[in-house]
Length: 269
Ligand SMILES: [Zn+2]
Ligand SMILES: [Zn+2]
Image (cartoon, rainbow, N blue to C red; front, side, top):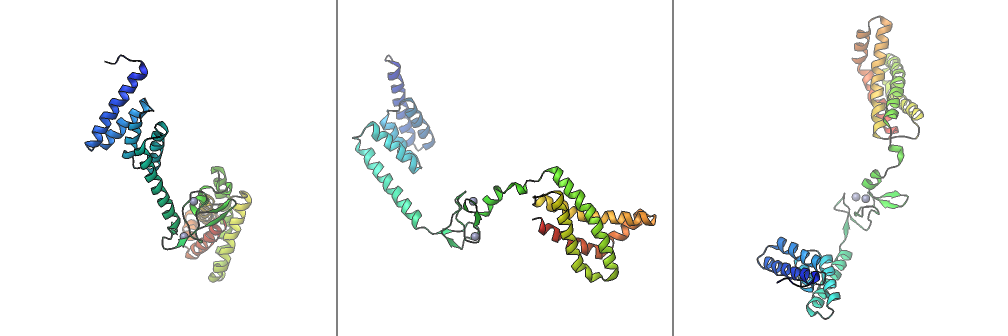
């Protein structure tokens, strides 16, 4: 039977695959049909019939177009392919038109119509969500992903920030302890100033860096500073445990911690 040249054999095989593919398509087994027809065109790229069948079985308009163009290139007089391609082009034009007419809505605020798109990911965004970036308007997510090295903080830098804010925090806590002994409400003004001072010390130790890791280290450092003060007071009094307990149970000092920590965190954002 298969006595021809190798080309003829693959051509015959391609035709058999086409036959089986068509049978599968008629039986409703689209997956198998797609696979067999793909194999048919892979074996024999000039199998016009297989290209036509592939174009009817794909959901992708782009693929449909590509298959039909392939078929037409092989057989320019194929009326069926020409008519189908015209239809595809028509549909493509209609889709493009509709896309141009459809108003865009902000991805974050679906009730806001907009004409802006992120120039990195392409998502529609409203004026409020658009962030000015050196290369154009971008969405917040893309800006966050491509943040500057300012937000890349190494573990050593985090450790340094923790150490500095603990020491500065201990001094701050001492000041707060004195102030609370005079007029506790002065803490409302003094604490944010101390927080700013701790943040400034961290900025000096780890220059030109900010972000979550530094904020967290500084907040923890301010709390550890309070603990350090408690231990110090205890050591001075000869009873470290009791000193620590007295400081940790002092609610005024916790007021100081909250105010100082929020101020410091805000500064390092
Ligand atoms: Zn984006
Ligand atoms: Zn928005």
